[in-house]
Image (cartoon, rainbow, N blue to C red; front, side, top):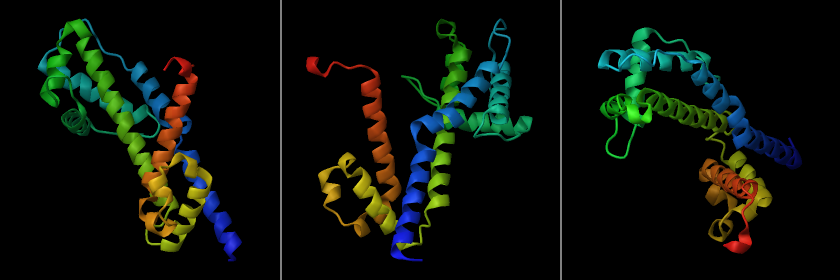
Length: 210
């Protein structure tokens, strides 16, 4: 394979990575299917929340999301769903005063905030966040061989040429070989910067008033 061929292949790999982890793609393939699955979940909101039905409803919700949310799609037993629900609340649930499973339960019985619906929305957000993170890890590991130093350097060279204007000057001063091991972090930084700019532009901000 000639040098031009390897550079072309590296460019294709980089294009694939950006395509698969851009905000629009992840909203369509991860966020929206989970949102739709969450919206289809039904429970009797006229029944007062007890610890028993809190466990039942939140476990069924997790099971439902995992079965119907694209990007998640796995079958859980009742016990598995309960275990996963507990792990999600312990790792990902937080309110201004506390965090974890017990904080979620206390919020669920708070009628002022439609407690149980509030908790389920937070659970869906956490599943979305972790599904996105897992997807991004898969994209990088399936496209970039961590042991192929030369390939990482070639991809980094192309990255700096195409998106150098999105990176701080201190990074641009480094040779590609020095940055090869932080390739995923730089790609995420570029995408994050582009997302921020797009949000500002779409919000029709009057920069003259700033």
